[in-house]
Image (tube, rainbow, N blue to C red):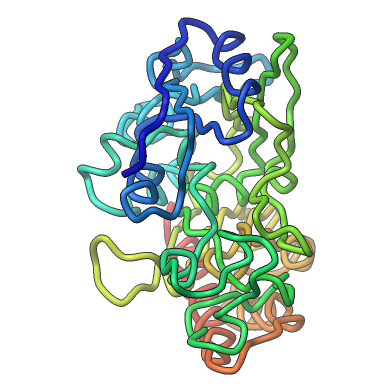
Length: 329
């Protein structure tokens, strides 16, 4: 690991100010992603700003009747919080599907959103990777790409976003509050927080330089009864998904009145299924309806040489998640 400066600011404004002094600065929350990348010599920050002790550690009801999740609350505390479990069980289920208990104990909510979109070529410093070193090329584009993107990829990058929590947040229509150096806050819809690679795959989010996540806001609970998070992976612990699906439904007399859906590990960001949500409204909650919804969800998929299987896998994952959500009450 290379030497770096370390600061532990006492306020968000101080943290942002220290971050903007050096382009090679990283915020440090739980460190479950950043420290790994530093040890592998993938990330080489000159300056670390530790933010885990900043006072964004509350989970409380917000003004809109929803819930505010402090950015520095751990994933474990978030998943097990009574307000989250009762009103947003989809989020709790998704968080508990991630990594291991030890990692969830350390990882923060803000840090979870900021973990790098990545693939094995990003970790292997001897291989080309535009995300790690812009302009060097994408080794996965014509290399081993069986676990890579089927939506939204570009010639510059075909990596996928790894977060389980973020897939649920996309389905729940969350927003993210961030603060800049002047102490001003702005709020981003979750669908606009992460970005597609385009010709700048080194940028994972639409945050401006130095902006600090302070909170995640959830709208008024819409899916406390009919929900499911399904993560299909090669082993049951400490493994990223091959494909995942977050599903929330409102159902009256077996008719769907509202839906929140997203797929994970199919794109550079959580893949919100807006068209499918609209398609489901007014439809009967049947397997046939869900199969039609899955076909719609995957109709624009663009597989790579080795991941065409993901199309059928994603369809079956979405259908199964919808059926599981329907059976809950």
